[in-house]
Image 1 (tube, helix red, strand yellow):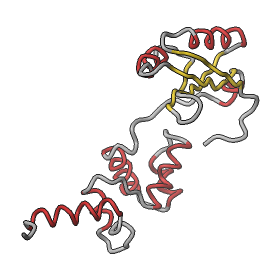
Image 2 (spheres, rainbow, N blue to C red):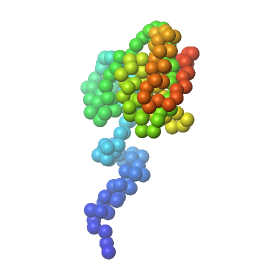
Image 3 (cartoon, rainbow, N blue to C red):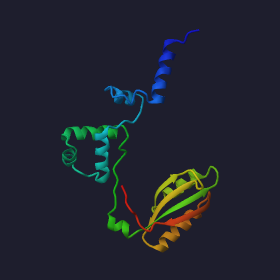
Length: 182
């Protein structure tokens, strides 16, 4: 029995997407194939543009264009495309290095009860001192990046996290210094 043509084509497309075999070939169509199949493809210029925006999201388009050797319209259209594709999800405020140096930062590793991660995450989202919460593999289930203005506030925040329903155990590490940040 022969396979209907539409099934054969679907299998070939699935193979191409799964193995990435056509995306590494510089045939001029790789980007279109990747975008058609929902892959996120960025060329070197997109990566450099994204790095510049991560350094300063408020940089004028003209300045970005000069630094990349591109026209303003090209930079504007690349930014718009990165936003449309969800690669740039938004723009955020970064506090000054002087402000950050005045803060106490810590990593709080959490072990949570089975199926309680969602409840814990919802509760922690409401805590302004919690900057980031990540699910991880290994000995802990979650790692939170937290900050506070003083030691007493950090102590209270860590106690609040440890007291949440669903949290079995916490282990905290205070950041002594940051060697570099991107």
